[in-house]
Length: 311
Image 1 (tube, rainbow, N blue to C red):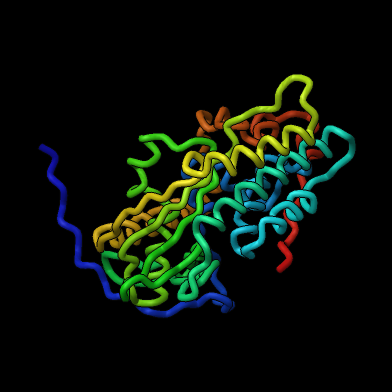
Image 2: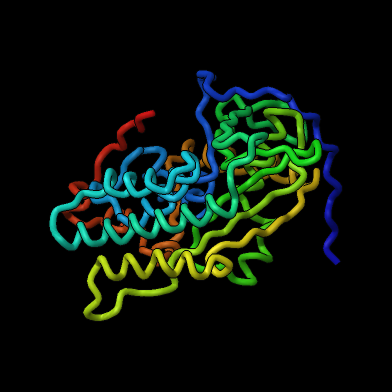
């Protein structure tokens, strides 16, 4: 039997939120950690060299547009976000944008009808806390943890985290692994460090993307109407909620993992070597940095320096 060394006691929270402050330190986020663990070289392209493909893949905007509509409590805001982000050059681009805008609007309308905004909740809660060594209590001089929680609510005096998921499907495996959700673990940890209060439970609110496809000979307008009708007729299929509970053990582990991930980045920088995980090249949609790793002659012309986000 494998012996597991005992972990030290969890150090008390600082109850200090540094969000909005210029700490002079860099930060890690859930998306950065996910990229790092998927492929360190991809992390280096995205967050060290700060480059991105000139041609942005449209599929990436669906989830962001849905989240924007939920944040503002207005389905039409999501549709406007789709058109604002797309580079529409021909009729095919226009048709794809109209379909995606309809999907986001219908999905957001269903979500807002099933889960109306609660008066004692806060959407888009931002947190920024210093990384901390769980074994010694010393703080990182290099990194903070920065992130946003979709929504924080009060229920019977307890702090509840609400997470919105816009997904293609909901499987038994995806439900079973919810207690291991890294994004939520980071958010629960960041909120605890920022407020001194533990997140007692998480409400996952899943909204499915359409299960129907455009038929041969069906116009864009007809398909959009069918999508809207399908969301209206099958609300229980397209929307559901799962609840999980959190404990202190997960907070300590998250603190320890954050420290290890930050150390991995520091060592990679020191050695000027970010390893490649070639199994990630074939992830869904393919890696946008594959031409660079392959050394394609025109690869450099496909990328640009990331521009600071407005707002």
